Structure formats: structure tokens, C-alpha cells
Image (cartoon, rainbow, N blue to C red; front, side):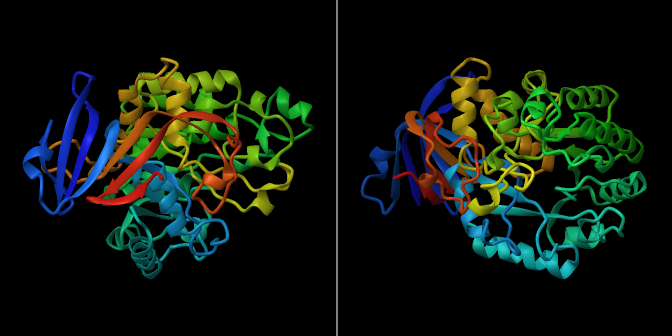
Length: 428
């Protein structure tokens, strides 16, 4: 059994309340303000929460763990450890792997590998189409669900064919799984590597227009309305995208979407130079886009926050934007970055931030999430809200260190992460 003491949680009134929990066989079996006194002498592992905040474990709908095929960048083991350090107890892993898990056998292998190698729960996405190529045949949706697929996506590649997307949406509806989209019209890319704005011109780099993203979301919302499926948009980044989703929701389309911490915190004007660690897809947009994303979260247009944890080697990212691959890491830094830059500034409440990382992603994908109540699964995180630190590459547990946030100062730190009643990360 595991006893958690000396912690507080946010009660329904939004106030901090002292609590102690007793966990046995993956579940919370007892709660109270002081359990230690009558459990004294029992054979129990004790965690002292140091007066930190006790929260349900975070859920990330969007990570890349690179295994198999990209183990130099990340593995399931290192990626899950990085996620645990960030307070995440469940993540959904993208299928842009080598080989792509586009058959029942490969999906079964991935599901088993995730279970064997990860210290937390790793749900596996299936690709929409064979080899992640839009012009090829769809995977067998029913068989892939049977093999463990949480949802379907060709993340990293926008589905270019409206016909294929519509067919996929109909299949997704029949198996009751979300159809998850990286929205990008290739005919509008023109080799762009960052947002098409003033800063791109100053750096003499080709830009990616906002309509590259928003046009596919508009297309897909119309298709989803016709197909009657659950359509989920990855990493929205533009004000036009927010407007499209808001309008679609108002019309009753079953559309949800996520936003990444880096798009909430940074804009293209923050890019100091032509540096591959600032290259991500979608790119950092304009300041008006950033403000629209914040507004979209606050009014419910954007449903949750996801990291799009995308590790690459130092050699790959230590290049110009034209040469470097897209993507930055995010699992370990999401909560402290968001707490520092939004909660402490009064833009988000702590309760809102926790909901966007727990209850809402669970609701979107119909996942069991931890609650601080008797009988709940014991997926929990303890946070020191006062701890101060500076982001250093050497402190990161991810195999890769590709992030523009190195050197930033943070307030708050994950001190314990508990998955199914077992401590999987502790700060030392």
C-alpha cells in the first residue's frame, strides 16, 4: 500500500484543502485529512508531498516516441520517463514510425512494446492510410481497433484527398473512434519553414501561410458534419483555424481540437535567428494568432492542451531552418511553462490549467482519468507550486534536447508522479 500525506488538493470550491490518501492495488481506497495516526506501524510506503498540490495525472493526446525507427531521437522508455517527469500518466503516441503500424500484426507489436517499455500508459494511434500516404488505401479500421488503436491519424502529413478523408471519417464513425488530423494543404506550402510574416522576410526564409492550415480544417469540418464522426484537430495555430472550429461547433459539428504550450507562449517575432530549434510544424504564428489561441481556450473553442513532443537529435536540429526537421520536445516542460506564464499572471486559473491537462483530454478520447476520490484509479501528480528553476538541457530526461526554452526561468516543479499506484518519477 502507498500513503500520500502532507498534500493539498483543489476542492470543488476551488480552494486548497489538506488531504491524505491510501492506495492499494492501483486504486484510492481511503481518504481523509489525517490518516497517518491510525496507520502508524503498518507496512506502508509513505510519500511526503511537502505541502504540494495533489492533482490527477496529466493526459497528453499528442506525443512522438520514435520507436521503432528513430531510437537515436527517443525511445518508448525515455519518452515515457520524460512524460512522467512532466506529470503525465497517459499519453497517445503517433504512428509516424518505421515501420508504420499499418497492419494488425504491427499494431499488436506496438501495443505490446508500449506496455513492456513504458513506465506510464501509452495509447497507440493507428495511421489512417497505409504508410501514412494519403493516396493509398485505408487501413482496416475495425481490425486496428481490435489490435489496440486509440484513434486514427496521419499526423505529420495532411490528408490531401478529400475523398479519402471522407471515407476515413465514415470508417471512424463505425468503430466509434476519433479521426485526428494534422491539417496542412501541401499545395500551399511552397517550401515554407516558418510563419509567413514580417519576421520570415527579415530572416530571408520562405513562409507558411495561415490558410495552409485553416483551409483543411474548413474542408474537414464540412466532411465531418456529413459523415457524423468525431473529428479532432491537432495543434491549432492560427486565428482563422480557431474561427473555423468555433463556427463548426456552433453548427453542431462534432469537432474538438488541441493547442500546444509553445503556440500559446511564443510568436514568430520571438524567433531570434535562423536556428533549427525554433522550427516546428505548425510554426510559431503571429501575435494576433497567439492571442486568438488563448481566447479560444478560455471560451471552450479549443478543448485541451497537448504537447506534440517531437524529439530530434542535436545534429539534426543544429542547422538552419531550411535544413533542420520540424519539431520540439515538450513533455517535461508543459506544466511549469504554462503555470509560470499564464496562471501566475492571472490569465488562466490553476483549476482551468489542470482541467485542460486532465479531465478534458480524457473526455475527448473517452479515457479513464484519475479523480481524487475513493475508488478512482491512482494516477496522480504532486506539484511544488513555489519551486523555482532554470531550464537546462542536462536536466532533461528525454533523449533529445531540442527546445527553444533552454535557459528560461520557471516557477513550479513536478515532485512525484504516480501511475496506477506506483511511483514512476520523483524529483531528487
